[in-house]
Image (cartoon, rainbow, N blue to C red):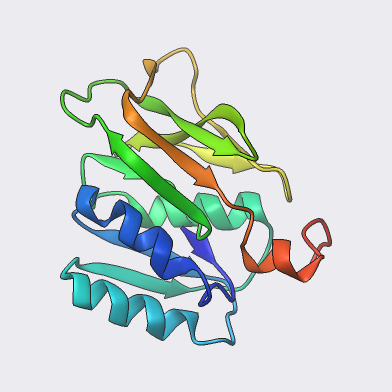
Length: 170
């Protein structure tokens, strides 16, 4: 996860995925609203170990790639979650075997899938400064949809959405 001024919403996202994670890695890119301490304190209360890194903002692609790189070695899979995402329902993580999983999202009654769950060690980089997309060696990887009775609500309530500057380059 990458965050910046997400104190108003990040705890909800973390609570929704907490039952399914054994550790966390979050990169803060310049919050001045207490996001960093909120995350550390909240995850400590949940009893889930992890690390918060502070890095300068470059762009979505570079910062998300760095976050994934920092998360390597913390589990069998790395699940990329946004601060304003909310997991609803129960995904089926039993028997994971693919390299990349496409996760079901719902935004304003529109459903779609995003590649958000990656086998640990898979070399993934995000390309793009605003509408970033993950890229990997497509020839060597097995892809699948993450099954279960769930979806991720793409709530579009992150700091950039609320500021009216979502597409502005900081």
